[in-house]
Image (cartoon, rainbow, N blue to C red; front, side):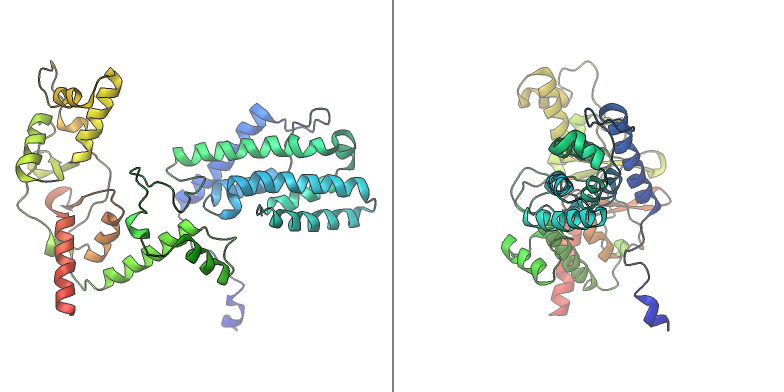
Length: 382
């Protein structure tokens, strides 16, 4: 009996409370700003600048599942406006309410699919229009522009701003878009050797093109391959492969000394520690470069002089390590499996993961350590 009814249970994985809160606050932000600054919460049949119920459904997609193809700008804006146009046309031609609603929604579904702009709230837009003959009589086809077009464009713009503010990506990145480093290579976990057309055919074969984008499919396949590779590392832990003889710096260490340590040891990262080796943060080489570039742009000068100034040559107040170190980022313990370290460094965001014991730095796992561990596993396996 349990198996028979199991299919009626939730089909979505558990959502962390913080993600649910992020989505809910996004909807508050989107509809709140739209209602306060752009559209009136009260129906205005003169200008048409008022909120309609389908905007609530659009907000669910835009703020809760921004990676869905159904939530992308083209789908939302074109889908809602096409549905509004269809709804107005049907409302002007068909009188019986039930027939009017059914035809409006059905034709809107077909039209948005042909326009490659499927957006579920568009069905609600068409139904809203069909149930509002007074608004259609007053606004006519203008209804598709205001309130539908203006409201949807506003929500999409606010969703893009909110996604950036909360560390998400909206609209989703296209398959061949430049990565976070400005090159056209795919992220490491998404380099599959499959073309966009091949990935699209996979989605079509399993009828998932409305649910998943090509870029997300590539990332999911890459993540699955990475997880499978991680299983091959066996029971090794961070404590087994970490570097223990560490070169560290203090928060007050001048950047000239930090740069000298990078050159001398050919490191790409340096941990920053306090008294009793308490871990405070880490400096990557990119932090030096980024800070120098910011100085150069701020002073409208070239990069090289800015780098020299940054390394405390002729400055009245030396820049210290604590000013550029990163205090965020992944961390591990000696018992962290090597399999868990792989995804931490696979995307290129960090070059090393500090290993801590009660906030005290006891080691660090670099990419070199990780590659060496994987190589040993591969040799043993062969």
